Every structure is written in C-alpha cells, then in structure tokens.
Length: 356
Image 1 (cartoon, rainbow, N blue to C red):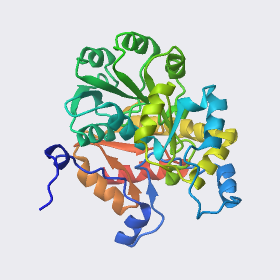
Image 2: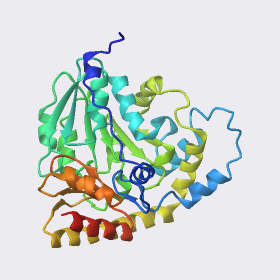
Image 3: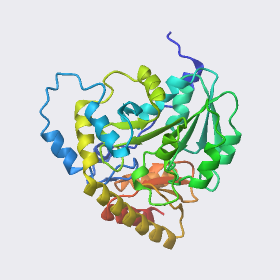
Image 4: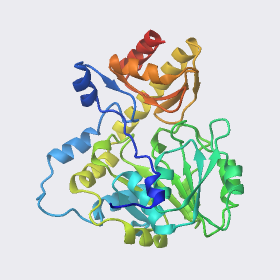
C-alpha cells in the first residue's frame, strides 16, 4: 500500500463553494444565486472578454512562460521592475510556491486564526509547523504575531483584508509590526481584496517593498477584476525573492487566455469603479437590514461579510440552499456571505428571514 507522510495525511482537502449548476442539478431548481466564493457579481471586465474573443494565437503553442506583456503592464501600473513580479495560477498558487521555496520541515509559519484556510494547508504539506494567533476584535493581532516569532519562524502570513472577517490592519500598527520582523523572516501580504478597500488607514505595502523590506505582496485578478475562472494572480517582491520562487514555480503556470484577459482587465478602469461602487451600495444595504434584524456582523473592507447568527448554521445553510441561495458556513454559528448585486442581496435577506 502506498503511504504518505503523516503531515500530509492530516490535511483536510479544500472544499470550494458549491457551484450553482451542481445545486440546481441536485435539487431540480433554477434561478439560484451563489454568495459563497467572493466572486465579482458584475462578472468579468468587458474589455477582458473582448480581448479573449479577439485572441489571435495558436493554442497549440505553449503560453509565454515569463508572461512578458502582463508583467510589463503590471510594472507600469505599480512602478516596479519586471523582475520584481511573479505570475501565478491565481495568487493561491504563489502562497504555495512561497512556502515550498523558503520553508523546510520543522520550520514555523505564523498566521492569524481564523484566516485563509490555504495558509495552514500549504505549510502542513511540507512538514512545517503552524503557529496560530487568535484574532483580536476580529482583526489580526499584529503585536501577538510579532511576539510569536522565534528562530524557527520563516514566514508570517497576513491577509489584508482578512478572509473571512473582511477586516484590515492599520498603518500605525503595521509600522510597529514590520519594524520588529527579523531580516530572515518573509512577510507575505495577501491582498486578494485590495481593490475593495476604502479605509484610508490601510497600509501601502508597496512603500515597504520600496524601502527594501523582505515582503511578498500578493494580488489577484479573481476578485474585483472578475477573472476567477481563468486563475491568474501575481506577486511583487525584491528580485532575489522572485528569482528563488521562479525555481519552484511550474513552467507555463499561467495560460495564454488568462494573460491576455488580465492585460485588458487592468486597462478597464470603469469596470473596477463600477465593481467597487456596487460593493459599497450592497454593503450599506446589508448593514441596515442585518441591524434591523438584530443580527451581529463585522464591518468589512472586502466584498463579503462575516455574520454571526448565534445559532447552529448547518440547518440554515441547508434550508437556504433548498431556496436557491448558496452561502459559506464558517463555523458553528457563523456564515460568510458575498456581497452581490442589489437583487441578490435582497433575495438573500428575504430568504434568511424566512429560514430564521
């Protein structure tokens, strides 16, 4: 019998949000909405869709393994060098690449709890240790995270905004935190929801990168840009870090269609503006409705909300699915709900009232 290392055997596989098609097929219903995976309800950038339709490229050829033109576009946008950028099959892949590049069995990685489930999965997959630091008031406790760093620590993960709470770290506390980090520790700033942040106190991580700190900034086209189905993201770090990660990154890890769509999506400023606007409108609507219902929630800087129903959510989750509403259970009493289109938000509230 083929065996695996104990640390691999203990990993629970990632369970994605249930696809609409699967739910409707199982229950024989139509008109369902998915508010489980934090996708952009407006869909993909029209410019990206047009670029895909007009793509004149032989798909029997491998993609540009270096992603030259997308890197050039990102370089111009962020005023960084091309060799300070790495492309990934979503930013998710780059989390895994960072772990496999800089950690070895026995090393520690510090992270918040709860936060993005992929962090502990990636760390466990290489036989390394997870150091969980509980959130404080639903936010990263940066002081406690810095206190937890030892000679064994190689990476600190910070999701900003945090998934699943939607909260951010503030500039002053991040300044204090980053000044305490030893040079041998890589700070991974996971900014998948960066475009949705409206709080001016959010730290500008590119500033710390330009100051020469060992920081890896991860962003994605899966959220605000609406390209989740194409799986493309990127990282920014000093060229030495990128050089080492490229040794581990799989060849041709981002495909031709994804690179083409991402370049055009970057140019679609209007689509991003509309995406942020509709998210802010939906956020305020859900704030009011949930407050009127007496339901606890955490104010968010992302495109989803962390809602504590104070009751066992398993039955509620099943009942909502039967009514065509897919949400994300996050614990015994907590759900995470993506902010959707106005009609989707209203339908969610109406159905939630019904099942409660």
